[in-house]
Image 1 (tube, rainbow, N blue to C red):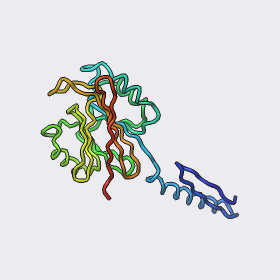
Image 2: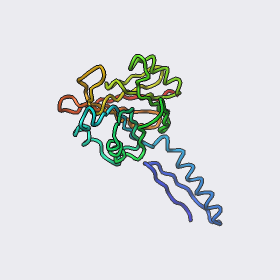
Image 3: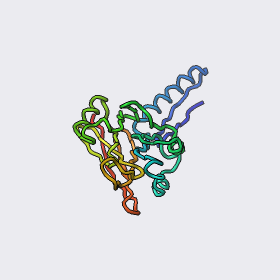
Image 4: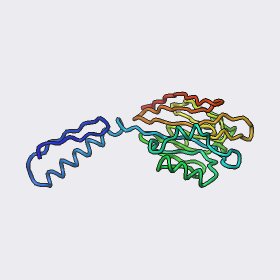
Length: 219
């Protein structure tokens, strides 16, 4: 064997192998694999669906049809749900979109995706609900780069103390304890190395509107 090329997401690794026994071949193959994986943080792109407060079927009949049309199976790697999924049918639907689905956890949870520590909490323990200072305290306790919370049923995203905070709102537009009219919304996070591009989808009237927010992890 003289040479071969490995390609992964436009990263080319060329490794030459000199004649010898298979032990030498195996050693050089291991070198290629290590070189390839050293590029992963730079080239790997992951899509994370963030949603919650569905309340199906107790408050709302189903996810909006226009949202279902956008959520295509096989393109999303992780799903993070803030809570109130309510039924096995809703869980089974999410499993058709991605294999890695986080829907149940204790008061708080940390999920590592790429270079990011993503903290999760439902949000009922945040007092007052959605309070930035209370959310910042939880993020520090979890040592999270990104903190995802829900409960208010209203989308919100902001950056504070070099951390990123997301509330995806209610994916179904379910009413909350404080408001009857809620705009349905969910979030897609496109994680690329140390940058997260967040796409916010909101169903305003009969139109899906999309907002783009970028967050870069501090060194």
